[in-house]
Image 1 (tube, one colour):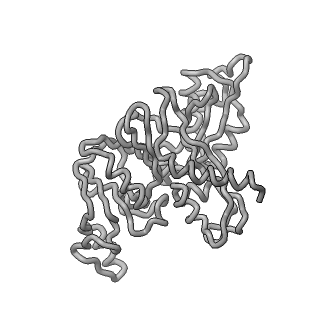
Image 2: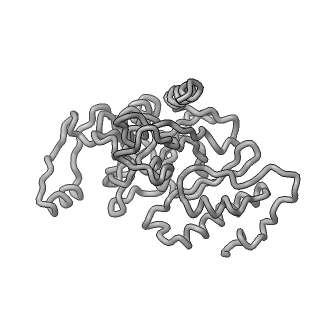
Image 3: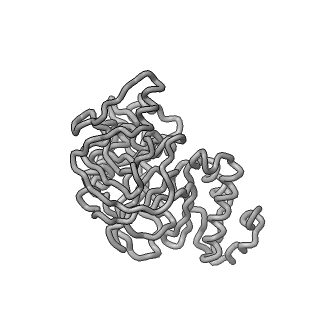
Amino acid sequence: MTLSRFFLLLLCFSWRAEATNYRLDGPDTDVIGATYRVVVRESQTLLDIAREHDVGQEEIMLANPGVDRWLPKPGTEVLIPAQYVLPSAERRGLILNLPEMRIYYFLSDHEVQTYPVSIGRMDWKTPLGKARIVRKQKSPSWHPPESVRKEAAAKGETVPDVVPPGPDNPLGKYALRLNLPGYLLHGTNKPYGVGMRVTHGCVRLLPEDIEKLFGEVKVGTQVQIVNQPVKVGWLDGVLYLEVHPPIEEHLAAKGDMLRYAKEVIYQELEKHPAILIGSRVRQAIAEQSGVPVAISKVTDEQPMPISNPLFRRGS
């Protein structure tokens, strides 16, 4: 490895560690962060790298197809998908985008944080809509709900009435309770599951992330839970498209995904006409890597008419 390459990697590590807060230059700031690459070190797993860079398990796997989750070859370059198109929602409080398995916390009109999360399995859906934080708990006890007891009984297992604070508590050290009965944002005693659909409907964060969020968020903060597998936004006059695999029960068919993507792009073109790069649009929809892709170009040419058949409503 060259000396310049070493310092580039060192900068990537230190930059990510300090880049939890992203500056928003104004309401037109749609894309934050930047992707970068790191080299696999000896004995590292892909999940070790994901946690080191505050990325979820599914996020890093989608961005690095073909790289072994448990035994990546030392010296392999891994893409860190640390660039994000902001969800289309009111930029206030917390926004959780389910397909992305990522939460955004708007500290103000000029600053945002973002963290990977785990969400509910298909049979334990995390609900859509608006909620608010009604209670903050440090070192919470876990009272397993009846649904969890029934699931355990079906497997011939039992769960205690109460799990006290400690290493066996699945809530971790911090919990933010919502006004939706039984739903929380909380830590975990299984951090390598963050970034997957593994919960009973609650939202899990990495221990280091929930600790930071817990210290900053206030009771009464709004929480918006959205379903946006396709996001579009502008950066330096270029339109970016970010596509994630859809939540199975919401958009199961690829044809539905394609129509949904067309609609999202069409709505943006109505506001800001642009010259699209069709091959990049199709590639992003096909790959669903979660990495933002530039799909327009800066040019003096006439923008593509929004009546183009590719983006006509219902086509």
